[in-house]
Image (cartoon, rainbow, N blue to C red; front, top):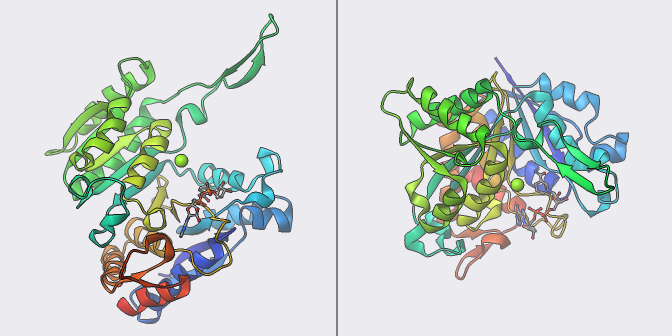
Length: 357
Ligand code: NAI
Ligand code: MG
């Protein structure tokens, strides 16, 4: 049966990079490797301009009716004067909560061809291949009470609340553990159980849940130490599972170990296996419209989509191999360019991946 993919190009470089990912999907479709139906809709600033709403009802409805969503990026200086409720980023948050995308997968893989891009010494990062599983719909970003209040003294007080239920912790741990069983069977759960009761519960539930996974090696680490270890010796990690706030920070840190923001994909999944797939970078307004953005993070997001929502892991692997081949050929967009390599634009890079498939 044909799988439905909703394509949301978004703003800035979004349409440019998404066009290349769609090229890859269409090439695979043409040779019969996959059976997909593509539909397009507006989100972010583009949707605000057309409808006065960064997440129009029809976009959310179409997203809910699809097997997977492919997203470029949203936002840009044009929409910065808007109130937060109308900002393009609000469209993203609405999609996450509307689809119940509680599991955010952020792989950080260092391609051997790009080792010079990392700011760390080659021996520290070579062969790096870790996955951060971040809980995405709970924690201090959503907990009540929250807000800024004025005390009787007239002084203002801001507050946010860290909240997790046992079932929320268990389901994100299961996502991480299931994936870990297909990889190195090694998970590090990151918390701050020495001072935060909420994460004391996290540690307890993670430990209990791990008992269902024979052979799984679960360790625990405080978040401050984890931040330090990621930079000191990142290869000690295989899968990291953590809450929304710690995951936000650690996943950006892990991504940057690879040095190339234009190379890293992400997946956000719900309980039904539906997912939203997007590069980790933003809309890069500084280079938008020039045809020089790196489309590989978006193309690699398609690989994650095939693996996690469309049940085609072998096709996912073909895409990843094709990307690696293109790098072997010495093709580089400006963001990953180094001496002796051939500079290519966005479309040429997409064409090269299709050819390498
Ligand atoms: P950014 O990720 O858009 O750009 C940071 C730097 O990396 C820029 O110099 C940019 O040119 C470069 N870059 C990013 N992606 C690239 C690619 N594929 N190829 C080559 N170079 C690339 O982050 P920034 O500048 O902080 O944010 C710009 C806008 O994007 C803001 O409106 C922000 O809110 C939005 N944003 C959206 C995200 C999303 O849609 N998921 C995530 C992060 C930011
Ligand atoms: Mg972040």
